Image 1 (cartoon, rainbow, N blue to C red):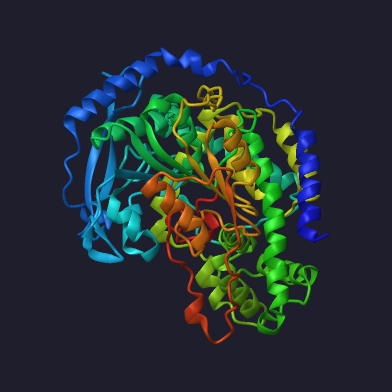
Image 2 (cartoon, rainbow, N blue to C red; image 1 turned 180 degrees about the horizontal axis):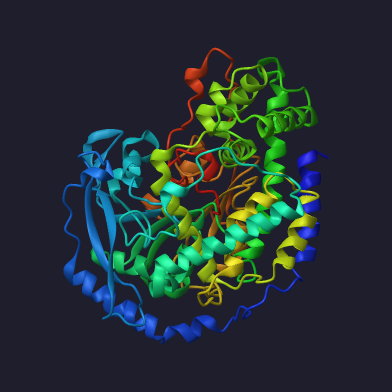
Length: 564
């Protein structure tokens, strides 16, 4: 049995035990959806949608600071901040669109009937989909771009859409930071104090409106956007966190759905949202980290980091120790190294460049590591905004443990078998322990047979950010859905990537409405090829953007990392 399987099994056993630990707050209620059917928010959403349908969206040139190419058009849609009071404060969401080309890319003389708008969300919470329409330029998306207007948008709080902030972006850490695998009590106290201060900053800067930044309101916003686009029924594709509020939408508005694609699905079980989701994620990243180390070991002749996964781990830990004593370039410490390698847990496109940077650093050349892991101050505002939205949505969405001892107990136990990501995940989410706003009960995602049109779920079997069980749970809860699995692969977000089998099912569904009756398995994509020293041009920090990914962050240490 592989080491990855052992780690996964150990983590699963531990998390099963943790599932019985109370997290406080109100329990999930299977009767919650019927209670919402005639709620003030539901009536407010219907009113806002009627208004949006009448107003439409006036698309024009995109503003200069949005850095959009001329082919894209931008506009705004107005939504209530609080759907229970639709005549109260309004906010504007920015929207981007590339119109359907209406020409078959295989035969440009052949017209293609327009099928409406395909709306996309890349996840987060806190990621913007404004760049999504650019995928229509890629070969894998040309057939879809011929039939659909490709529509992206910035959800509430993100970018120019009533942006949230919790602290001054100029105060983001620009220098090296630590990332102890087994933190001391004094270090924990420092991080608890930081989490409390961050939560206070969110409450102070967000004010009374902060409570309205939730996944349920993201789902309601989506229905208003549908109406503003002139669509009677929604065609939607959500990746990562986008699958969660997409599932909320399917539950709240099943009759408004035309087609929905869920790429890399969050587990929608109300008992998982969001505390246990992050425990599961930390366990899954341990397995993916082991897969990455095994790949490096198979290419020891290129990188010289070890012939076994254990030897590669020793090389990584040696780098951590050196960076703790003397940060690379004065910028990259253990925290930055861990952040850069965490990105490789999301996307195996990063494996060659990360391995090359680690190898070069241990051989005396820190430049590739500084380039890939160092902070980029010019991205500070975007990163601070993304983190603020992430924190607000997840903290507002559900109950969290409010006793630090619960976090400490659960994650100390988990770190014994999954040390790579566990504590970093804690620090990212700990402000939710000290959140001052009201907490919602997670909606029980579920549809009855015939209530929702058939939907498509895509998942990589070894995905760490959204573990595979989430896709299976979503399939059980959305009647008539079909699950397409990329077996033996772990990249987060698989639509529009290099796997022709996956893309074939995506095209068949979006273009023809066809789904595999019992789901389908696809063989894994090819493993990334190693990049030899001296060929660094092929190991640049960025990778081609595609649907299923948030726009690549410029700083690995503070990038969007959850679910999600």
